Image 1: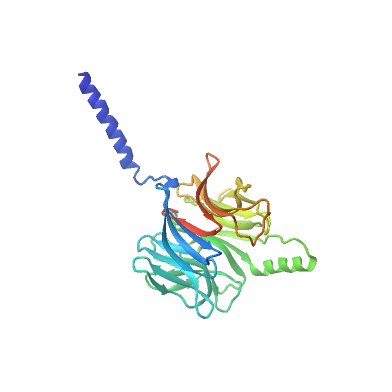
Image 2: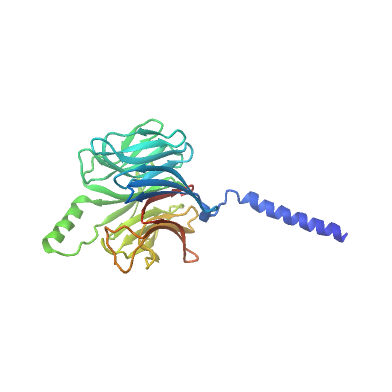
Length: 342
């Protein structure tokens, strides 16, 4: 009887263990999300695209290419195709794709002066981009490229004053947070600085939520900070932004804005280790966020033109108030990154 009872207990324990495995298969830990990281080597003039498996702590080079400048990327896991921006013969920057299955490269656009800040939607059929049109030099627009139809849509094309600073797409709610500003107001501030020889002050940035069709859904806030990143929460209830204290300052902060109450909550400051915090992104559970930073040489002091000792991709756990370093690039710059679920 005792032996039978023991066998039953062991059987129940095994079932519990296996049931946890079965029911947690899609309930992944954000710390184990597979990451895609784009690194620019200033000396080699190459960008290298890595796949990093956090659970295995292993990096794999998926693609490398010589370039004269930074380029953002988007990666389709469905098709194993990499999308990026590159210079063409007329010195404009256009959207390209590289099929990693065949290593075949193809130019997708011709109509822009510049393409950057590339992301892909959750269906992996629409590319989001920040673009300059052929006849413009500083008025950045949002645009999309439909991979199925090859059609380009430029958002708010006739607006010659509003310019896009940054944007970030969240696949969990299929919406974007877009950071924009007035070119006229920004130019006035620059003119005042040049005239009075005063310190540059940040312009007023508008934080707005858009759907994937380019329709504005909600205005979040106006912020006068040197913004270096923004992310919409997966439940669309809040936005986090990173910002610098000054253009030439390594000191930066991360705050969270509650969309309903407009309350601002402080989350993270830069330190001797984490300078120039940027490219913040909520994880898919809103338990924390990833961010990029630079590790600078304190003996030399900070220079905006200096290559950092290290570029670091880190994760901040909001509840535990702890930072975990995820990936490092020595004497190189992590341009951007993406993940499976955010």
